[in-house]
Image (tube, rainbow, N blue to C red; front, side, top):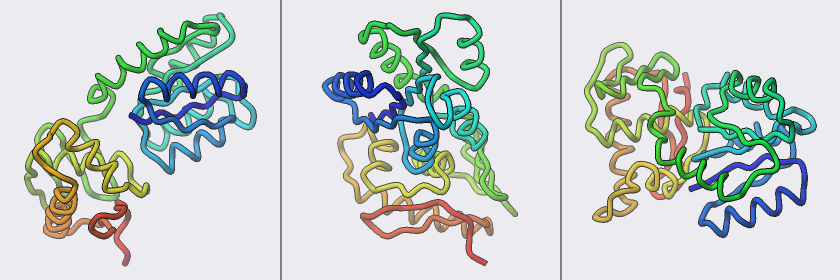
Length: 224
């Protein structure tokens, strides 16, 4: 599991990062809201933890920006203030939970575990990129016409569409789409990317998956 931590207090950030890593999480730590937005747009995360009071762009504005771009990654907001207004502004911006400083580290870990167990509830069932639409429940991909997808094709296409414009490594894709399976290896990623390319071509899609076997892949607009 990979976490983005945006906390401008360096000592607090270092302590949180050390504990999260000791608990088995990968952590990217940044110290202002603008850096958090840039990181979130470059990489995929299972959960993000944003302090509200940060320089350059506060946590609420950073979250509003990411939600406006379609990022549905679960977010926990941290605030040093106890006023109800801070809680409301964070939740209104799209936060999924909040903690008021000082807090017990065990509580933060419990909140993260709860969110990552319920990741599917944070993602929409209908997605669109360009003129291509994916109905996750119906497992249908459509553009100028439509085509049905297999279960893993749907999961893979959903992951690409939730991370449009981001380079995704074979390892990251495998860990998200095939994380519960022990009888397959990472070569399966290339096989299913090939399946999706054929199906995007069959519906005359204006998006494409670029990348090479065993390397990074990117969902982007088709070059005219």
